[in-house]
Length: 117
Image 1 (cartoon, helix red, strand yellow):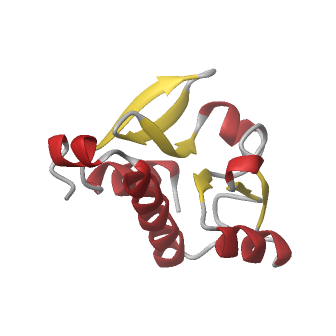
Image 2 (cartoon, one colour; image 1 turned 90 degrees about the vertical axis):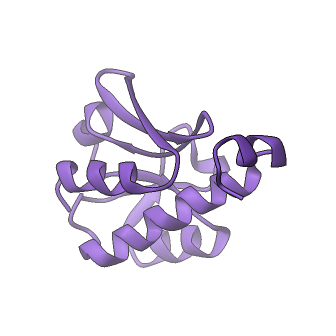
């Protein structure tokens, strides 16, 4: 997936926003919480980064498609070994899951304000 398509997919998710920080890195958030990273320092050090479930975290690393994301591994974030490590539809599904994982952690009030519940 190209960085442009990655960004477009992330921004299509409900209530998703983008801010640029950390050396020009595109940070995708929902309710003020990060769910994916692209470009900037991410691009310089490999592939896209995103939040995963415990199972997906173990599976992606075990299969050699990703590595624990720097500074975010304890929160079950991965960094793809390359932007094209996964087919586009599969990466899109992981991004959908990352978004859903963060939405699930938001308060009921925040979800209501964002029209996510």
